[in-house]
Image (tube, rainbow, N blue to C red; front, side):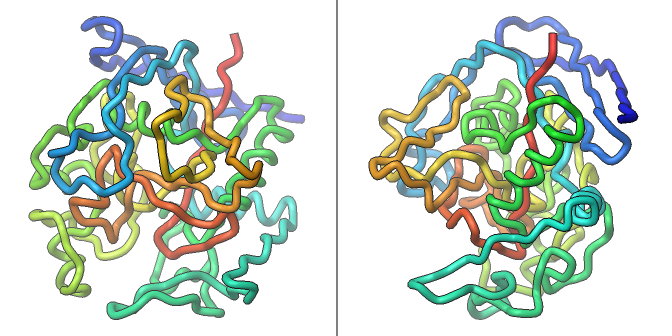
Length: 312
């Protein structure tokens, strides 16, 4: 099988183990594979303070997370074009989602007044126009996991959906503020496609950031400034699946980067998306925020990126 490998050296300043400039490497295992950025080991405080702006009930309390082994994270969210290659090569069939025993056909959508599944909507048509370079949405955790397994088989490297700790660690890139750019929500539109003033004109009942990013729905990945690890859209554009089973109480949640998948009943019907999306205002578009969605649930604002092992 033909393999592709791209190595890029990016000087990035961050303050995890030291204040020195670290070399962040990226690689690409095949022509249509996502570009992966190597995330260094280190420690950072995740979760939120009780008085953090927009804090939601049930968020993780401030705690130190330590990653002892470098790992890789996709530079951007998986795009519509990348997901299309997977679908065409595998002929993958998505699992049926159910709610109270009834099938959920299509993809969840918000029309400005209420949410509901629309049968005609799917990853090819989420209910609004998309470019091939936009993040794929209307995909479930099961779909994201299948994509990661396909990449693993295709490349010989182990790919996976990142854990919640890995995602937040990578998003913060050494920062302890609500966002990787700092504490000012007015700066969001330099770094993220979030619920902004342009969005508020179409959806006036939704809370928004006090700035304008120019987009109502998704936009191409990598459009805005990256964080200090060289990762794009870790806040905004699309919510992103993580592998953690949703837990109401995070008191005993792992902080070493592993996913928490041992629910009391040994089931994992709901997973934990993070990062917010183009529809998210201040309270839902922060590093610490988390959501709860069924593993087979699909939404017009929910996509994913992958993590991977680093071969030494």
